[in-house]
Image 1 (cartoon, helix red, strand yellow):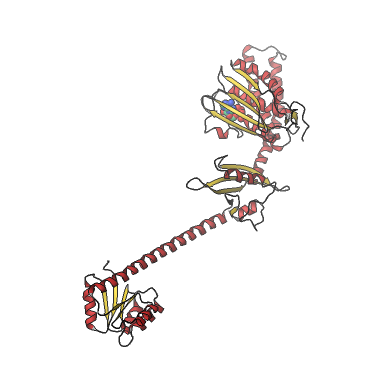
Image 2 (image 1 turned 180 degrees about the vertical axis):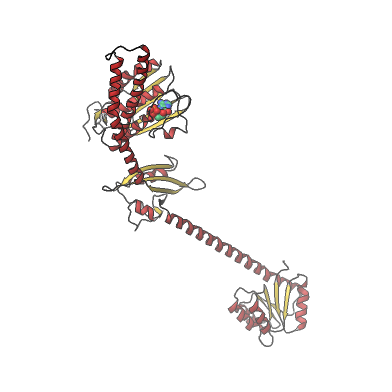
Length: 506
Ligand code: ADP
């Protein structure tokens, strides 16, 4: 046993004091000896001892009285009572007052050592329990501090934060989220997001990320709230999983992007205005070049003809850019492509393929069309569909080397009509893939250097598809090819009459 234990022995008989000290000296305890209860009590008030041995019969203050005071002032103090008059009553009385044990005189050295050792074992347990209690208290304090710190940070964030458990019930939110989502702050905790058509998308995203194993684990989306003065929000919703990948809940971070939308709109309006102003003079230049080229303004030399042809090509490129810019501005302003009607896409595809076949033939490419025998009707704007098809097939031809194959596929897929344009061309690297739908984004590498374009074709496709409540997806592998999938919601038709003309739903 450790020699660090401190013992206090109070006995009025010197022989006993010395005897006990001798018996315990082997253990190397630090023993303090006093002659009576009063001295013992005085010392105990100054510092605690690991064990106190008290004789009962002592002058000034007897052992039982000291024991009573000790229990009242220091209830954890372990006390052994030494007595020469062991009666049952006395033993009961000592125990009642809180003694740990009693040892009766005369005792053998072994008896004393055993009782002291047991008492000190209890003291060791007491010390260990106290250490654990302090440790637990400290870690609880640390957790509380950490929790408080995180809560303060979340509370002060300008972005909205919304945390749910795995049953979609809100467990944490900050003032920004309440403000951005225009939520009532009462009764939010413990309940799912209030049901409203405006919050449906967000609610669905939370549901999707919580569906463990299925669907994406992060969903980013933009949506608006409010009619008259709408707030545009960008929401990133992510699943929160535990160490063993069990689903714990979801976190959504919300940002107000209204100012970005306003800026974007200003930029679009400016681009539209400039494009519009440029179109007329450029068309005039194009026409006049054609007039000169046709020799209507007098004869021209072959060299002049070559230079004029090059200029005409450049002007055509500029006019194409302007046309795209105006298209995208109109789509964004919601002016164009709103004349939807029930359509069978197949006939459009056939026409577009016919138109683009000569272009593919110049590159010795094969342009194939495969269509399911029974295709659903879609509610779509014919002009928009033509634009989507032309852009995708045109890109496939452009970005596929000579002799390549371009496959166009049309088939139903769940509640959608799938249009797929697949090529075995140069492909797109994983770094570029997420950006190809951004305005003006063009992949720049050795293989694309010679290919002309505006970087507006795919943004137009994406916006048009979205205006039809559809999706566009892309999969690509460098040097192996690219596959674009466009999904447009199909019109539900009466059973057994899927070839009949469906009633218009708009
Ligand atoms: P661009 O006018 O440059 O063709 P798009 O918006 O239509 O503009 O396309 C953006 C970029 O995506 C292109 O510059 C090209 O790098 C890449 N891209 C589009 N379609 C394909 C395809 N079928 N194969 C490989 N790359 C493609």
